[in-house]
Amino acid sequence: MNLPLAITLGDPAGIGPEIIAKTFRDAAALTQGCFVAGDVGAVRRAAQLLAGPGWPALPVAEITSPAQVFEVPPNCIPVLQVTAPLGGIAIGQISAEAGRAAADAVTWAARAALRGEIAALVTAPLHKEALAAAGVAYPGHTELLQAEAAAHLGRKIADVPVRMMLANDELRTVLVSIHMALRQAIDAVTFDNVLQTLRITDAALRTTLGRRPRIGVAGLNPHAGEGGLFGREEIDTIVPALQAGLAEGLDVHGPFAPDTIFMRARAKAGQAGEFDVVVAMYHDQGLIPVKYLGVDKGVNVTLGLPLVRTSPDHGTAFDIAGTGRADAASLIEALRMARRLAGVDSL
Image (cartoon, rainbow, N blue to C red; front, side, top):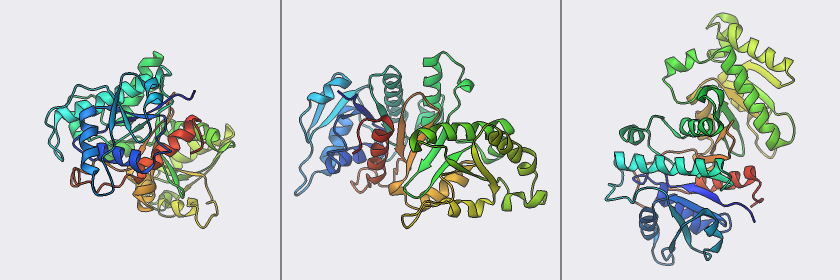
């Protein structure tokens, strides 16, 4: 029997519960063997929110263990209560209670995956300010999961390096740095960080592609520094890291001007791009191109973890939470990719 997959609740004040309910409603085949790790009440409210003419509310079944998901009848949303039961969460508002529930769901799912109880986790969006209000020490999913993996492996956090990859059918990007101020992100463009990113990217995509990925590397500065006229990071840091990667057998190229490399890597009209993936130097440099191509198809994958974790590439959307208008397409794609990466099936 396949292991089940967990979908974490996300911030219950945001659109997480709604898009989860829509995923179970609109992608029934894909949700086979999946359950929600979170709060039963929040999922029931979301299911009721989506009810209407021709769309009866999906029943919510409380389960007591991940394995019990296989006993739940079809057209039902299985939920494992892994957080404290939620009170009157104000939809669309930041709260410590919501932040704590979101963090608790992710922590539970990470530990279950590390224990081998679930095949993968798909994380609905959380809100970083709500996490901070709850006193959570980590700014987002990636850092929280990294800490859990390090604790499980008995290592220091720095010894479990992870990277964020955002991907859709047209483009993949991996980031050298993730959630930090831009001034800090520039300082994070070091020889070690760039080379480590190349290694992690190569190892992860070799598994996915069945071959060495062709990695294009973006420069940090305009025109990739223009030979040192606009900055020396390319000459002093990025090129030496690429040369070290080449010496290890990695298929790396660059650094190229950041304003053109993503177009070169983009797959379109059924034809592959020049590169399988682009390594970007900081968060927005890499994420804007992928999101511009369509937030509804983008998937966030954490590379370097001893578990499979994916998520949609959007946030909690407090402005439309509770209206039923949120689009579940990115969550559906994240679930599809998680199943593929975990080897559960090819749905």
